[in-house]
Length: 317
Ligand code: SF4
Ligand code: MG
Image: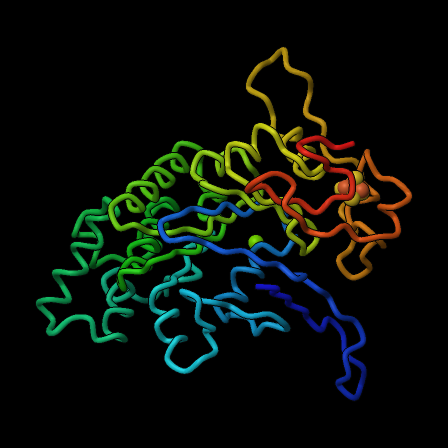
């Protein structure tokens, strides 16, 4: 809740911060059990930083992280949270040590948490996890570099599943893969969700794949959440002008459709954010108000949220 992450980009000679980058600005988001929340936005908008800050990979500047209603900074809650919320990365190498066999990588969390009574149990569990991600048990003795990108991602998922998590943060897990492999991984994640009641925070830079898997979608721009709502509604009927521009930029399979219109202009530097609504330099609806006042986050329709002065009941006016 109200999570903010600032990085000191430059310090003076006394170590006092000179330039501060606010990568995540006052973002609140709840993920329900068994739910997939898609988080989209252009690269650098703070999606990964948001996820990493929740997991404690970066120290948060402000805000609280609640796990089942309890602050994870409280005694005892953090260990529980750490075990039940796992992460997979765009590059599975980030979670797989290239010098470790697949079996060693997958069994590491099991050993750390003393999940298996003996080596026999451990071996059985590793094979079971490999099977859950459709990999052969002979993969166990091999090294990450012997596998394709899609297979490596499966290994990363097997490792994330080892501790029976409740939620997995997926940071662009398919962006580096071929489209056919993307579909396989997405279907596998969906199956695993059904089977184990998993929740996902699914981070991606475009909406085209995400809206198939997400119950709800959040859209981030320059560190802020600008829209949140049911997945298909956000995709088919976006409220925020930024979401509209993202969707307009998705190439259409129909050759007669109008050419894709990307959002006008460059993304401003997060070091010198525009005044008022941070999207105003690129927004076709920008008014005087937008240039001076930052829009508040509000429920525009039941279950749909946006931060825009000009969204009224489903339209931008
Ligand atoms: Fe555009 Fe104004 Fe809405 Fe910002 S607040 S998205 S500038 S209409
Ligand atoms: Mg990222």
